[in-house]
Image 1 (cartoon, rainbow, N blue to C red):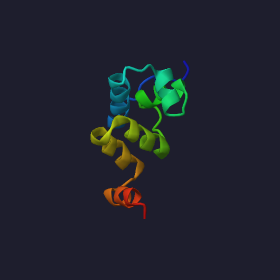
Image 2: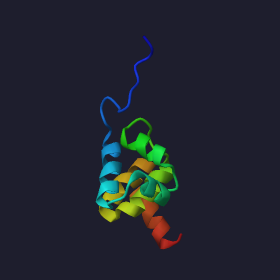
Image 3: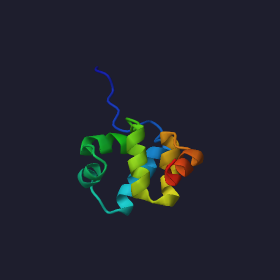
Image 4: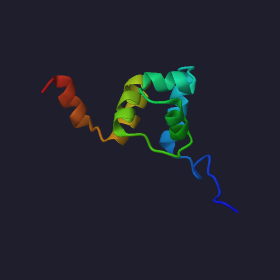
Length: 92
């Protein structure tokens, strides 16, 4: 027998659930969502199934798309701190 294929992570990470939640809240399919975030529908599928963690730039763009409440969750995963955000907003 060959290696068992895994189609969904054994335990779905919180970020994977949240990515799917944002996409569904926006009523977008994976292709449309991927276009908005500059990646393929296959990448979106891998992210939502928890098979691949998105890069930081994806989380930052997703945070902007998700709005301020959910956005902070994604920005923190990308490594953005409140101090970073204040500095960016002040233009320093």
